[in-house]
Image (cartoon, rainbow, N blue to C red):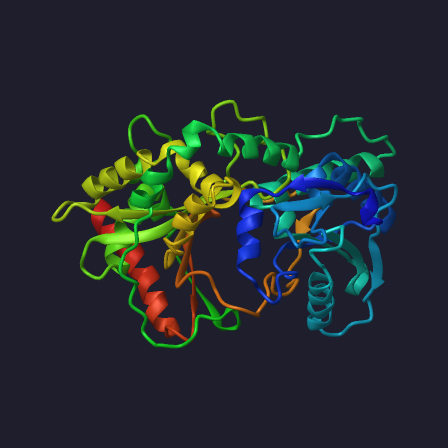
Amino acid sequence: MNSSASRVVPLLPEQSRFLTRGLPGAHHWNQVALYSVPAELTAGIAATAIRWVVNRHEGLRLHLGPTGGADGTGLVVPEYEEFPVEDVDLSGATDPEALTAYCTRVQESLRLERAPLVRLARIAWRDGTFRLLVVVHHFVADGVGYGVLASEFETACRELIAGRPLPGLAPAVGAHEYAAWLYEYAHSPEIVEQHGSWLKIGRPCPPVVREKPGENTMATTGIATVSMTPEETAALIRGASVAGRSSGLLETVIAALVPVLDDGSGRLRTNMIGHGRHGLPGQPQVRRTAGWLSTRYPVTLELPRGAGLLAQRDSIGEQLAAVPLAGSGFGLLRYVNEDREQRADLAGLGEPDVTVNYQGRTKPTDPAALLQPAPESPGPDETSTGLREHVHGVDLLVDEGRFTVVWFYSTNQFEPDTVTGYATELCDRLRSGLGL
């Protein structure tokens, strides 16, 4: 694609933040899925379907220009007349690792300066079965954005397999049309006046304790996963609920997490992650927009001493509710607003040692869906180069009816049993605090 035909667009806050990390392997930071698909979902049908989806969402046609995003802009290429989908025959492979190795090579082939940052491959696999690899660089789609792409792609494939023309849907609100709106909003008095509040909300804390003094590298990322039973999960959701809100689960879990990691002060500084698709006054309708729209902000939370878990939950809830605009203003001031002094102030706060990301409840795959999760691995979705951002990354979700803690850390800094112990202690504190 000729970049001279591309259009300059502003980047979203999370895209600008990602570029500040300086990861040597930033090209390999993906949303990836490997699906089992029926034979009638050919490479040609997949190509037509993904072209229809990518042309609807300008954010999926983004790449970096000559500035590398340093000026807060990228380039969006025109709509595609054709979209390449590889058609690969691995039916003679005897080892599933051959499929994983191929998927990994595709993942590593993306480059931020070259569109498209979306890759598909239809793979003939063993025993007459077929796989479909879908790779989307995180730079152009967060988790919600990937879900939009996958659902629209499935719809398009169904129509094409049935011999029906694809519907002439209007383009979705563009991610960078929304970024332009955010740019204007970032310079409004409502956001600019939050500067002093963020210096208090995100105030630094002493670093969390490391078990070992090693470097916090991507290559040494470890993962500990601990789940509760479906019965415990149902009781947890009931026990954590707060009148007037759909759930108090996140606040309850944070209240149980603080004593697992704090130094005895009753405080924890963490990044909070949001999907970024509502909550701002006059915000465009971006619920079905594919892009990296998610938000994050630092917050230092304090537990009331001597209180029970539910009282601590209520305190955490009040502290989070006091954060203006659900935290969206931080990214606007830190990465979009052009006041260099304010940006430097917020950069000076540094990254929290902890990130908490509540991913909600996963939906089971529809058994009638064309795209079914494949049993083979598509390989690592992130680079192994560079440094990790946080000491502890704590993902929370309810998966197949089980509350699950997925805890990311560096094996240079912690023994695996230690972090598994942290996740177990978190669940035990929930059980005891709620009488599960």
